[in-house]
Image (cartoon, rainbow over all chains, first blue to last red; front, top):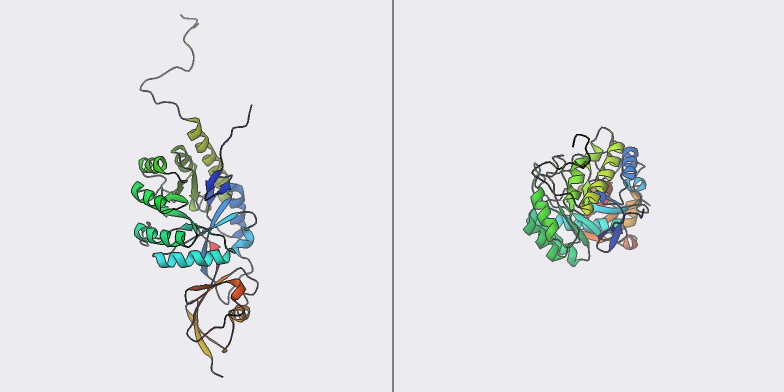
Length: 263
Length: 69
């Protein structure tokens, strides 16, 4: 049997084997983070940029556990509520990573919902693209906004499945499908994935990838959930490529009727 | 010799005049760490830290990578 082929996930000319991207937040400690991320098989790993804790530096740095030699590090502007802060954060991240220019843009609207502020997101995206960044953009599941972001030159569109950290899965699969059908850049579900079936559903809808953090970090056994997510993304991708059977109103026997002994 | 007052990561700090950004980083025990520096909202590339002198009222940010989603 020949091996089943799938194209790699390609974002701004960079090729990734895994279609699962994971975050590094909310883990109990660095050891747990390192083990879960490794088990997830992810090539792309997000991180945040924050002020150093002056006078209370610990010996270990996140980048010692999640090495830029092994992973593609994706800085995330989480915690920014306006375009200006998001752009500053991306520029600091680029300096931190020696010129690496692939970023995850996320501009939030308020503390309760962490819903994306798409107005500030659009502004920041334009500034970053003009400044030479490749922008993977977190946004709402609005197909018109998604199209605007693509037209502007974003490298990937990353609509939410549901609120960040909620684990409510994919609340509007119809919108996601619309976004997927109309996009010529990769579409990744970012936020809301709660368990493996949510990740599989995103891929079955035709999404190019899934980005998640809490679903692994807050599972009872993060390392095992990391493996579940890897398998779910792969299963959902294969199911999408294979093409599901048509739904039927009535039953259709799997076993032939001909030759029955009571015939 | 009067000290310079700067804002470092949002907190006031006084420095000897003519301190470079690199000297500040070393005084803070951050030498050799993977960090990025911004002065008055402009990035200071690593290659420029040694010859960038901090001035009175400068707003300095020193950041690093932490876990995030």
